[in-house]
Image 1 (cartoon, rainbow, N blue to C red):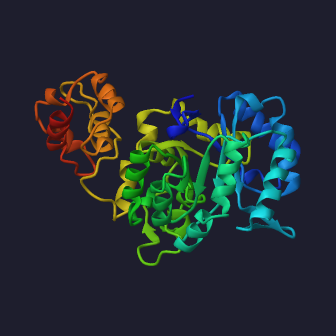
Image 2: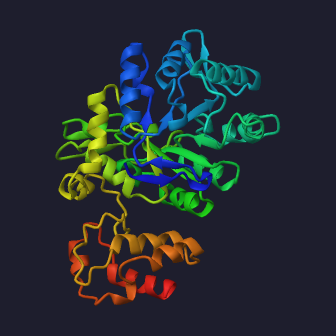
Length: 376
């Protein structure tokens, strides 16, 4: 299990976590089987937003005796209207459902308490207004019922405002191949890096659409991270379906990603995504998929290392990641990470082989010179 840091919370999370959305409606025995298998395989972060009491009870039974081994989330604002899931901003109702969560799941606290599913400016203003759900979440942190505050949504502009507010520690947002056509997506990644806000990637398979065998791929705006936003493509011509391993590799190559939360209905599906850890470079390779997403910004490194091998054994992807993350002003931690690399950017002999291999048109030689100037 590869671990990463959950932003400024300092919590260690596996690169692949588990979304519990697809366990809703499953028998308790099946839910328990999946949760137990995930915990035993080292998965330690679990996203829980459904509000159905029976589902919460089933999860409580599954996590019983394992709470100290896992990080659990809850979503403030996820409620029920009759038999249906709904989103609310009414503090008293949201407080009741959070108390219900703690009781039914059988825990005294959650590790991340999300402000749930905010997709436009007016809603964000309501969440952050005096007496709103942000204040409620901050109160729960002070009283020890939550360790960190998160924000979940499907609109890049709204999510960026939340990140730049300084009020949240974790962002949950859609990240998948189609993210490249979303205006503001790269700026959102930069904001997460600059504010040390952990990015939890959801919708990594675009609701399963990326895995379908079809020549025309239709993807809803909310699965792309541009809910409530008009314009831009939602239809892509593809030659073949992506594999789960390719989807995961692409997402985990992106900047600022702390973990992913794919949903799994069964142990077999769980093992399918965890196969990422033992997969070969060829199995993870997604370069041939990128032309289908024509708006991919050429010249931008995604740190995939398709440019390797390097004649002087430089880790080009890691070097360019540190260059991009620094934004012109490296932190002490970034300088230490650069110093720990096996080779320095100034060792580049400018042979150009890497640029010939790069599927994204990155001017690697120029970027390595920039890294040398910044870090050396």
